[in-house]
Length: 184
Image (spheres, one colour):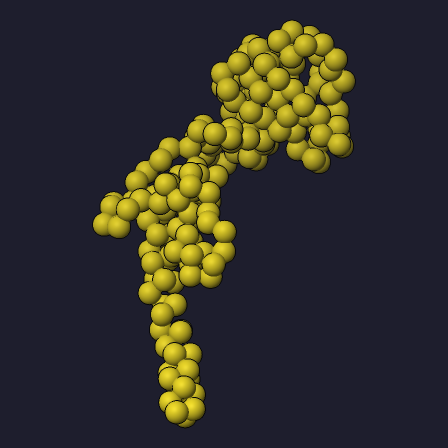
């Protein structure tokens, strides 16, 4: 009798990897269906949601329901979800990449919010919803103390993949920025 229990226990243990493989395949298929999502944050949430079947097998806490809902159903075409604000097309040739474009991203736009991090770098939100974060390598620090709505800015292409933010009334001051994707 004892031998039967040992043999059946060993057979059950040998079958465990085989049971895990369909779950892994299901997780990877779900992750592949997330591939059509353009926005990195939404894609990552979908990716986390696709792991829900494995979380169940491992008795882990369930993934956020909002993340699970992002995973397209089996048989669905990968959907294309646009990002909150697509990155501007930058390639205008070698010289345009080096010296930047003359067309501003935003011109004379009101700020709705600004925040400083611990190092003094600023993140700016504009009236049209664009968000811009100052590069850590930028040594110029803003010393703003008025309400955000009193500042108007122009954002134009800078060197490489950066942008220049100029505040109207601050002559000669340029803040080097990168676009931030807005959270949903």
